[in-house]
Image (cartoon, rainbow, N blue to C red; front, side, top):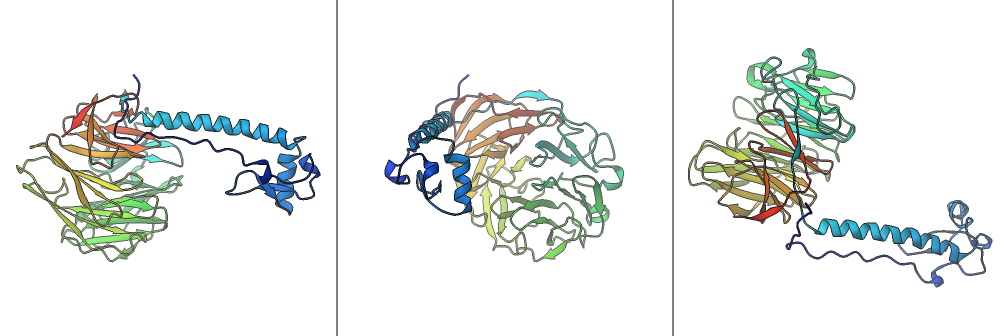
Amino acid sequence: MGRPANPNLPSPTYTPRTWATDAAYPGGSDPWSLQPNKVEPASPAEGFVPATGASAEEVNKLFADGFDTQADQKTYEQGLRDGANAYLQSLVDYLAQGPALRFGQSTTGPLTNPARILFNKATREWCASGPLTTGGTTNTSFFSRTTDYRTSWNVTNEIGAGAQIVCWNGACAIDPNGNIVIPGAGNASDGDKVTEYNGATWTKHAGVFSPNLLNPDVTYDPISGNWIVAGASLAGTLYVYTSTNRSAWTSRTAPALTWKNAILGSNDLGTVVMMCPASLLGFGTGSTGQVSFSSSTDGGVTWTAEDFHTLTFASSGTSPYLGRPKWTGTKWIVVASNATDLKTYVLTSPDGATWTVVATLTSVAITNVACVGELIAGVTSTGRVIFSTDDGVTWQWTDEDVSTWKVIHAGAGRFIMNGSTGAVFVGPGTGTGVGAVT
């Protein structure tokens, strides 16, 4: 099934770049190797310009001396460029056809149902983290990887008994080198600990947080090189810690937020977002949902002032959802919903500090979103897959129904979902848009 056309996207074009006129080339007679001035590529101008020095000499030896005339070299290079032009145009045409989602390839998942699935850029593996429900001591941390980079999972907990900690929410972060941090949880158990992986072994570090944190979250900022952990104490005080080596942690001044149940997100540009809902389960169980936002651009050392939002629902319900903050490439996006009255607020932010409600949907509860470039995919409380290509302002249903699959993740240009059975669905493929979401 082909990818559906998307009328909301502008018609893209790709203008092939052409060679400069002969006047842009070195003067004199052929071949180029006889020119007194050697040549090197000009940037950003097209073609070549006279130059001198060792670098120009090397370019000439590797590039120009293999041709008898300027015309021969120009013909060869134009052929390469024509091929690149054709490929880029076909790529633009393909992307212009609009997004498509198909979650097939159902497979047995990791050891137990993961709370978080991440993509390890260093090893090109999907990784799952969460609290154990079977196969070990309940609520201790587990970590599992794909064994074929995609669908088959190691069903043995990678974290040995000596490094396991209580981890209620499955919080986990991976840096570009494949190092991993999982913070502990619990006022009287492991809320002062982290377990970390250095590419070879897992190690537990005790006494790094004081007081103990009840249910902290963790993320990594690639610009500052900081790991950031944030969470509330039993007394309801918000704490922030940072580390560059995963073993020694420094306490930072936390933002003054109304709520303290920290959920973290980060992007590759050096922005860290903290979102604090009124409840660990979502953003509150009343008919009014409340959530606080703050952001940091220095690796969690300092934070912006609170941006507070109140979101109103028709009923209190028992199934509030607040998806983790995700980065689209141009904006942050968060979805807040209530499955009882099938209502979703979509909030976006350019900087993680100031948020705006850009859409209110009254027929669906989006539980979670993930982003691959401009394509935002969401999963609903009823197991339907929907998508947006305009930063969450409008949404389209797909013909994909994934039943109880309610958590979606993205990495390596793919989406991956997990549900209550611990199995996973992988996409995208060739799904079809079948109507607007209201």
